[in-house]
Length: 209
Image (cartoon, rainbow, N blue to C red; front, side, top):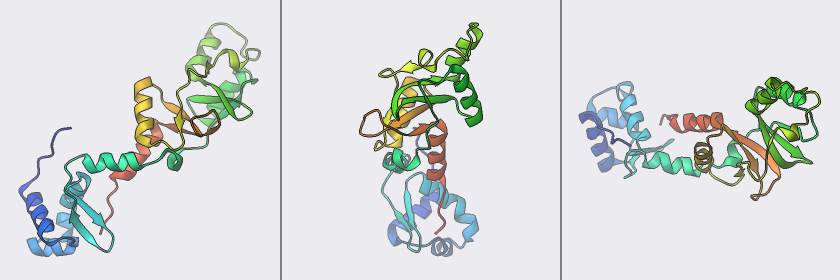
């Protein structure tokens, strides 16, 4: 990642925090004879980049980290169990037609196929489209004939980090992953690219102190 180039004012803020931290944003503004509103973008950049850390009712202090280090550490601390969504599942005995209806009513791109709550496969819009345009009667074709079966399904453990989940999705070029417990086949959730995006947004939010 390209190193962030700091402005002279940002470098001055760093020096103030190094010498006098923890220090509030109001106190930093007084040191520079500026308003708090003027400094807010600089403080946000320095915090996001990992140069500074901030605590409510305490203030800013120098973290000693550079650029994306703090961001990367924070991302690795986020757990799948805290961000997973309710899985959209369908029984393997269901028809391809049932799968199509479920996909559109639930507005998802992939369904998790289960047998008594245990993962047996996944089926995507692309899988179902192939069946439909192939002239098959989707009311009669069982979803078990269309799905990608385990162990060819990529999963993520509920105790894994969101970073691990993101790496798996990129590596295998999929949009979502079934979340399983203890690396087994019990489906307990789902994570998607939207999940990862939400986590990034939360990490990017700046807490005013």
